[in-house]
Image (cartoon, rainbow, N blue to C red; front, top):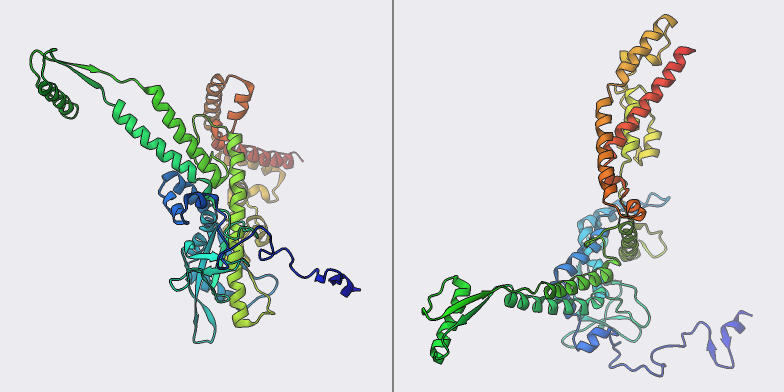
Length: 492
């Protein structure tokens, strides 16, 4: 039954065979088994990928590419051991550190700019018999091409049409490759015309500034003056622009006319701003993380940051796949093909919840003792990273006698002492000052709004400057709750 499904006797074809190939396609032709680069910009310009490297000289393009890289380079990395304690994990970790993981990740991310990035592995046999990478070098992508089967080829002086490469010799990072385009998607291709128009606008703006940024000097001489006298006066005016002094005949005059072309100059600025905006969208997917502009929206900036985070996550998976391919090859060469291989993973370092930490600090100061399991679960710590200090918890201090059993005659006095001790943490005057400052700032913001929508946008924690007040208020509420519980014990 399976053979009948696999083999179509009428067509003499199997479903396991690849039928739609370039060699059999009607409208595909190639020269010497080289797949043409489908990049539209390169075709029209008649140039190779080196023109994209020139685009990185533009400050805005460079800033955007570095910002995109920084999103991944800021992540921490680890080798995921899984459930098995692989004895070779430590060796792989030390190898990646030796290879400079940060540089390797940066080289891999170049493929987002140029579409693909070949990285040559220089293998070395060590004394213990293992074959491991000594270094990994990113090579210029313009040296390489792809054949009709999407295999990477290296163009040499001896073979312009490229030669195939050995197995496990080159890591290949590709940005969204497809069967039709193994060269990958290039963000620099998307910004080529924006940078070109920006350069043109900048050039005309400089000429405009030179022409209209200085006041015009108009020289007047008698009607019967000769050409030599006219040329001499023009030369003196030209020198006057630079030196601010001139000597002219007493029958000549000079008039200074101020230039006023502000509205025309705005056209160039708007053109450059527009091109910068297009560059940001092409590389980062949004604009607000690199350019705020005249108006800002907190909600919009959060949305834009989420878009950028999606791109960072995509780049992160790209880096992980390339480095995991390297680890796969290391295991195949040294340990065989049928061995479980650990995974390289990038992750964002977790920030400590300051509010939670402040609460735990207050609880500790009141005598509460936390277990190691609590710290591991709450703060993500490892068991071997810390120890619980037995001498830290001040349970025997007089200020915390409320946790001891006392006689009814002393309980009322202890409750009063407790109130005095607890509220040393918080100053009522400080809370009042902070509250008045927040209200005053709120009313000033309110006066600047023209609609409810504007008010909704600006009512953020950052604009109200209320973080410090919230922390102190939280402490006060917590201490009041402790006092209430203590008073309840006294009443009973």
